Image (tube, rainbow, N blue to C red; front, side, top):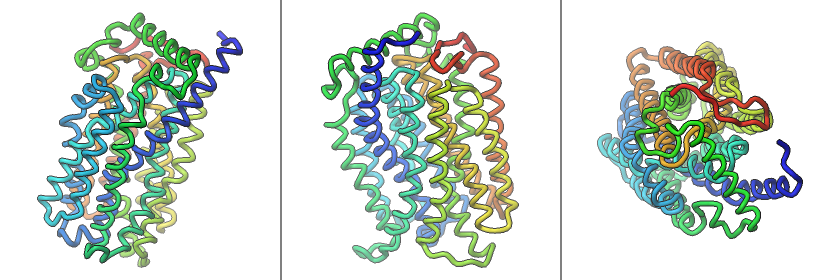
Length: 455
């Protein structure tokens, strides 16, 4: 059905205001979040690894133990967000993780590094699924892929902007009597604390309370979201308004969790080890890079990834999310990442890794539009957190296993083949789920109906 002109105008202005008022701020929070959790990847090849005498396996464990801490409190944290509201809970998370991140400035042993990485995960628990849930509760499903795509731009842009920033801060060696990598930890942690305080006053939990929307815009958003939730409840009451049990009993949620596992396994294998791989170019190819050179090279794959993400999500929004919007990038990523092993120069290697990064980031925001098609209320909070928990398991596994296999085999061949395997498995599972009607694919660009599927 085509909306009448006044209704279409209200819809257009309401979505635009949400896109301008909320998405950039939450994306900035995500930018700082991802920078804080991956700062260790810039520190390790630029002094921390040597100062703390870290092996590849120890660095992998330190990178990955963050996710164990995150997993412990992720689902409870998202349930608390559903109960207390995003404004309070996201602000609390940011201030807490900012304080823990600040303590990395003075870490001086492997044991302290492990402890702080675990505590950082505990402090950050629930932020990402909470942000996804928060944004999903502000727009109807037909606009969700676009909104989540704009939000997700923060992740690749964190490396595009964050890698040179980290390199510059590391270059401030001696400031306050600190090594360069300690200076970096000091200055990347402060924004989280500041943003957390601002979020307490800036964020609003629901459209009905947004004074920056007109009465007509508030009414339209509230009515659209209520009708959508009622439709989910009518079609699939088992998955709709409910508790932890409803989300945990959904076969569809578990399959999506396994799909997400494969993507995140590849994402964090790149995030934590790409700076180390680039550092290894110097010995492998007889080249010499400064700290800033390595920072800029690390950033190269992520700018094209941000561009591809933007246009990929626009296409999914305009034409309806299809299985190939997720499965296609999984295949490309799964095939391309092992190919990077056989390139004969730094330029060719980084070019192939760029293809992998584009594939991963194109799929992720489209993927996150799927759970909210059939989950609402507390079940949505629990289901989204459960899926993201699988991603955090992948984050730990990829970090530790990649480092361990590198130490065991002496190179990155086996670890990157494993990345390719998990991404291809994600593609197979996505196609299988779609064949069972479990992705709720629309019949057309304007038709987003729930589909009975895998329970």
